[in-house]
Length: 129
Length: 146
Image 1 (cartoon, each protein chain N blue to C red):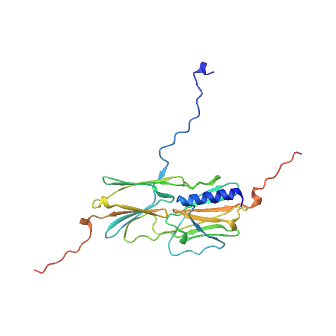
Image 2 (cartoon, rainbow over the protein chains, first blue to last red):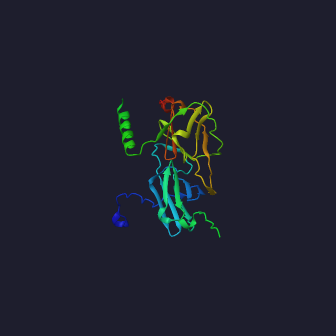
Image 3 (cartoon, rainbow over the protein chains, first blue to last red):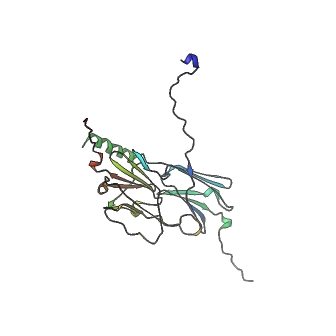
């Protein structure tokens, strides 16, 4: 048959893995205190190894790939838990980019954006004339 | 101990050593919990799986830990999960898309779910509840030729 149609049977190939899973924006709360701006994002199921945080110029991007537990069986109800998390923020001026840190606890990611010295509140001494 | 159990115990031990354990165990009690405090409640997203031996409920409860999690069941009222959210950091709020909140959800269970034997774990803000099925639920009925 293959001689007539030119169709040659090939070995089955694995399906190409899509580069990225669908992602949603994680809900975030943002706080400011005297020393820093805090971005608190809900990323349940993510672990430090699967979280990527990049600062490019003034754009801060967070990508968190979640590790879903391997559960055997058929899915009775699915509420879109098979999504990764992705979100970008425009970072205001006056942030010390070199000192940005992040910590992850119980599926909550907290980004610490320290203010540069120029932005910190300071007291101005009044001199007697 | 059956061979299957030996393998399962070994596997769990290895997973724990690799830091991929099932997470902290949350006790499952028989009572409907009281509300934890004044925080508003949010409804966590859940996935529900079913296999031959059990039902598995997986819920997103970011910020929830073993100490603040209560999983309970009551005859005829199903399964309830109540998880305390994290304390907010101090400071001026710029944006609060959720704000401080707890997680609460009640789920109906089918007759064949044996909630009294349910187990629950929490890890990385994900709560997993395993509810074994009653033995009768998986019993096969043989069809005889007439």
